[in-house]
Length: 136
Image (cartoon, rainbow, N blue to C red; front, side, top):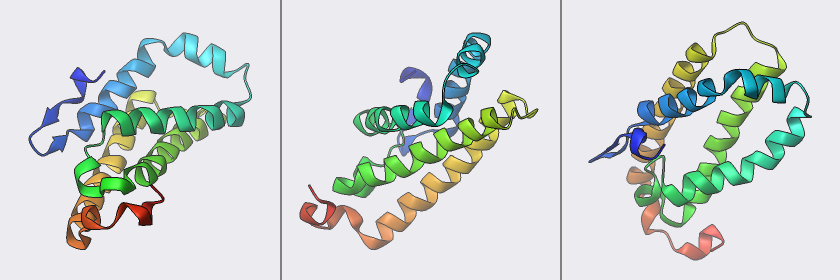
């Protein structure tokens, strides 16, 4: 999936990242939806959240490491919780919104948020703050 994320000079192309995530979900959609019908969704999301956040942080999939420095994990946790929350709510509501649409809307939402976060972090010079403030 990393190759499909479309790393650019300015960071990760969020649209490609979530397009790849959506494609990955769609590739196994019937199997995934069968599994989701037989598990406790809140428990599954609670277990997935830290693993998803860790994977995004380690790979810097959102392209935020430079802008946020030692505070990266805090904001990656925020985005991963939002993404997982969106998909879990979609499943819980048995939404008729096609997964392809959900993926595109999630891409637009996260992409706009990441861009705004990078801008605000640069204006505040967050990357220059002492690591001790981040709890590191």
